[in-house]
Amino acid sequence: MNLKIGIVGLANVGKSTLFNALLKKQVAFAANYPFATIEPNIGVVPVPDDRLERLAEITKSEEKMDTLPPIRPATVEFVDIAGLVKGASEGQGLGNKFLSHIREVHIICHLVRFFPDPNIVHVAGNVDPKRDREIVETELILADLQTLAKQAEPKQTATKEEHSRWAVITKLKAGLDAGTLASSVITNPEERVVVRDLQLLTMKPMLYVANVSEDQLKEKNDILSICAETEAQLAGLSESEQKEYLQSLGLAASGLDRLIQKAYKMLGLISFLTCGVIEARAWTIENGTKAPQAAGVIHTDFEKKFIKADCISYTDFVTVGGPASTRGDASSTRGGWKKAREFGKVRSEGKEYIVKDGDVIEFKIGT
Image (cartoon, rainbow, N blue to C red; front, side, top):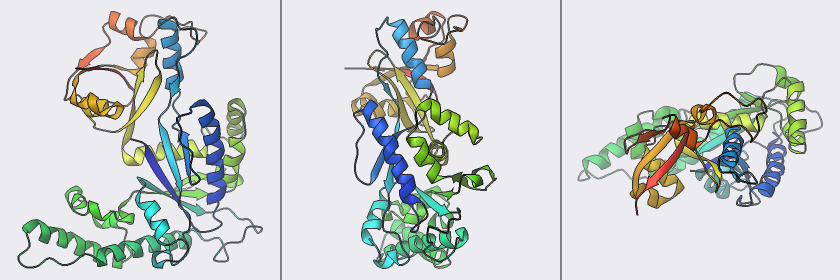
C-alpha cells in the first residue's frame, strides 16, 4: 500500500511552506526514481530507510555486478488539502472539493501554528494553537454530521443488522453533537466496520503537528514539532549538508522524516524488504499481515499462487558469514542470500506466517 497523508490547517499556519519543501524533496526523489508521480497538489517522497543501500551493496558483491541494483524505497503521498476556512463544511472556501480530497487519505496531518511572526498575519488576529485546532476539528465534525443527517432511520421491518447500524449512527450523532471526534466516539472495531462506508472524516487518525520557529525546536512539546522554514532550507541542501545542519539543531532526523515515521506507527504499518539483481526494495504492509497477502502487495497473482516464503531478518542477512568489513563498502564478504543459506539462517515459512518489520523475503510462487 502507498501511505497517503492529507495536510490540513488554517490559513497562514505554514502549510504552503511545508508543502513546497515536500515538492523540492519530490523533485530530487523523482530524479533518481522516475516512477514517482508528480501532481500539483501531491508530493511523493521516499520513506527513509538506510537498510536498502546496504542490501544493494551486498547484492552487487554477491552477484559480481558492475553497479548497484536500483534502490526502490517505499513512498508516501502528501496531499495538500487546500481551502479549509471557517465555514468549509457549509461550502466556504473550496467547500466540497476540500471534503472530497480529505476523504481519500489514510491519515490527517493537522498543522497548527505555534511560531510567532508579526510579518505573517494570523487569520484570527493572534497565535492560539488550541483555538485553531478546535476550529478545524469543528469543521470536520460539522461535515460528518451532514453525512449522518442523510442516513434514514430503518423501518420496523428492517433487518437486525440495519437496526444495529442505526444504533451506531445514533451514537455517533450524539457524540459529534457534543464536539467529540468520531474516532473517540466509536472505539469498538466491529462498530467501526458497520459505518466504514460513510467515510467519516473524524474517524480518520489525526496526527497533530506543531509548526514552530527554529528556536522553538529545542523546546519540549507534547505533539510532533517541526519548523516548516527549516524543512524548506533542508530540501535545498546535499545529504551531507542536511546531516550537518540537523546536528547543529540537535536533531537526528528532519521533521518530514519524523512525520512519516510517526504516521507509520499510528497506522500500524511496517516494511518488509526484497533484494536481488533487479532491485533492492521496501514494501509497506499492515502489521500482522500474513505471507501470502504480503506477496500480493508485490503482485496480485503472487497471493493466489503463493507456495512459501524464504525469510531472514535484516540483521542476520547483512551480518551472516563472517566478521564485519572495516571498510563498510560493497567489497564486504559478509551477508547475502548465498551465505545465509550456507549458514542455515534462512527460514522457510508457509501461509500462516506473519511478516515482521525488516524481514528480507524471497517468495516462491507457483505457475
